[in-house]
Length: 320
Image (cartoon, rainbow, N blue to C red):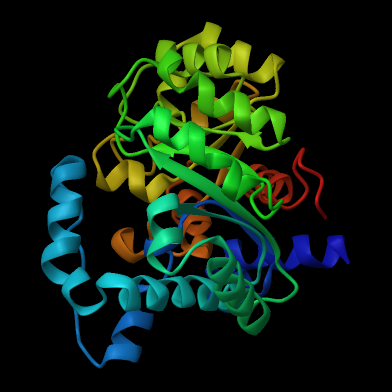
């Protein structure tokens, strides 16, 4: 079965066959839940047409401006967030995502009525759209959050056993990594996979320091590590997985283009990577297209992309 799936995926890349790529089992391990659905899905559900995103954004600020101007007004508030969550699970079913790590913020959980109602809602979408998907919910805090308050209240969410990982996102170098140690100690106590957003806009030194200070298991983005042989060797030796999002990096101008994307250097230096969507609703490139873009640009070979796909399905969390 694995051989057949690999052949189907390889054929899809070589033939530029989207249907074959959609059918091949894949993972998406860096997925922001409120922006995890396709723009086309929102259009189909709302009957409203949206402008395509630009080829590049003026940084994170430009990205947020585009989203809040053109898309969010049609799916905002509690109803809009739930609507977008549903679309994210619909996409997992459409794209044969067999391993899905999707992040949720504490404020979103409270918005829909607390952890019990939240779990019921999310589990319902999981069962409806992609029951065979191994689903790994990720609890996420923004880097500017009240860390003391978050640390005091986090037990309520993670003692349920629902969440599988912890992440901090929302801008790099907002605070020193040491400030987040209390959150990550709680994550370690409960056996969560420890992750942080670092090294998209930040440096190779930032990536290594974050891993060392917080005891990380994985990194969301981490492409800045490609500028340092020492950091790449450190990541490879310690099997620290980078969950890379090519379109996000290119469209936010943290990577020149797909052909010269840092993922090539990372792979060539033995760093373990996966390929993911980040914010599908904004970057408008679903997971099969992320693989295809890198293949068509000549960045990575079919064999390299196949290895990455299989790592995402059968990674060190060993859930499949």
